[in-house]
Amino acid sequence: MTILTTAKRKKLKKSVFGLPNSREYPEQDRNHQINAKSRATQMVKEGKLSASSAAKIKAKANRLLKK
Image (cartoon, rainbow, N blue to C red; front, side, top):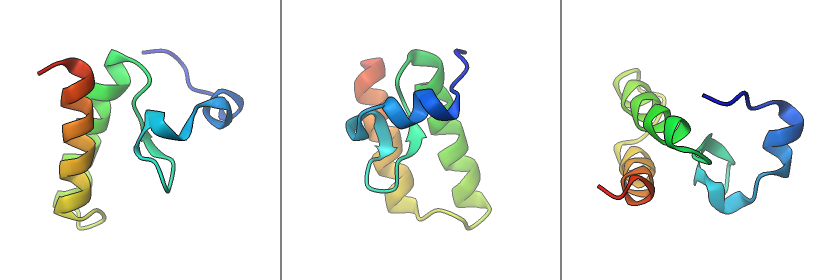
């Protein structure tokens, strides 16, 4: 996985994120897309993310991964 520094993260377009309005769950490459799906599932289980937000993150990652 590529290292995502604060400076690199700030330069990313809003559309690269799984949740673009809050700029969370970056999905700029394959590894980050897979990781975003995993973290979304984990956060739903912990009660820190809604199921609908997780579904949006997973749908976008799947689209980018062409699943």
